Image 1 (cartoon, rainbow, N blue to C red):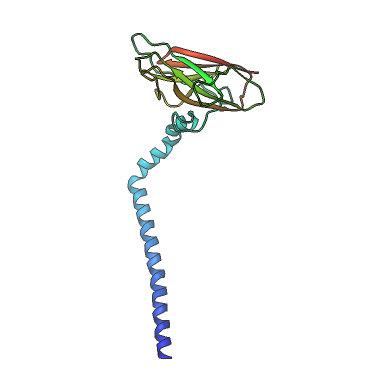
Image 2: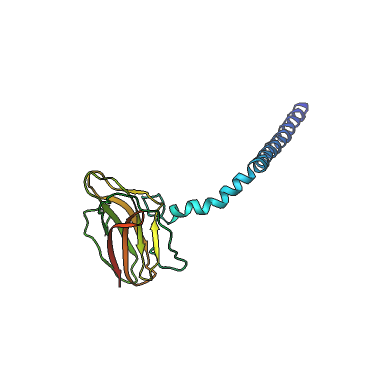
Length: 198
């Protein structure tokens, strides 16, 4: 019987020792979080306020280009006209821009989507051989609004003159009409393609 009491006493000590240890660990973690919040609070608060601004291009950018999900078409509620960067000096190359329904640059180019179907197209661009330039992609909706795909200067031409993937556009179109997809360096259009939503 004495051995059973000793065993129970040992188990109770271990149980309460574990509870106190757990409470100690939780209070240490809480103290560390509070300490970081007090010391780094202003910096973290500023970073958290800027997070939507920093993440917006990634969240609205094309899949693959900036790691974000596919974008919708511009022209919906709240569409704005962002200010482009100034145009660099010198001769700018002409770029070829096109859309395909398949994720292959050699697939047939598309120029029309039917109303009611989900719009999905892969965007491709090609520059002249021996030239590498950074460019932005802008899409103009029938109502005149424009939307940029991805962060500024994220797309670059292939120096070998091959096609480069610029991601995809997907979603139901908000407005029927003619859309223009435009490659822009600074404020100068260097190539474009149009497609119609009927």
